[in-house]
Image (tube, rainbow, N blue to C red; front, top):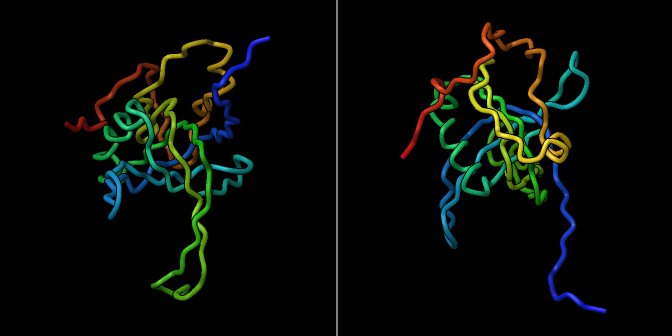
Length: 169
């Protein structure tokens, strides 16, 4: 009988699709700077969609690279939709300091953005991750919507292009 000293973990992942917003570099007082973004994830029936907002820390070099490429599109208010996988979900309570909710308690859902499966800019598919293993990839990656959302334009081509994404150094 052999024993292993390796730690094992139980992963809780959230997969979905949503709109990318507020891409920013966060510089905390203590610790290293990191890339963050908000995701307005779609939830509910397709004819009555609601949104769940996640404040995410972008983890992993590939996810960081892809999110950085979307900065210009988000800043110019293009609709950037992504298929995503989040991990390490937690909540953060805060007090509103402005507006009609000033003084009230609020809750922010926070997570790590682990994986970007695809990116659409104004309804045009501009990135799709290559599947590593068809069986596991299908169960982990959220599918790109086949029917565009009401505010998305229908693309006439089936090709994948990247002109709407900005490359950052």
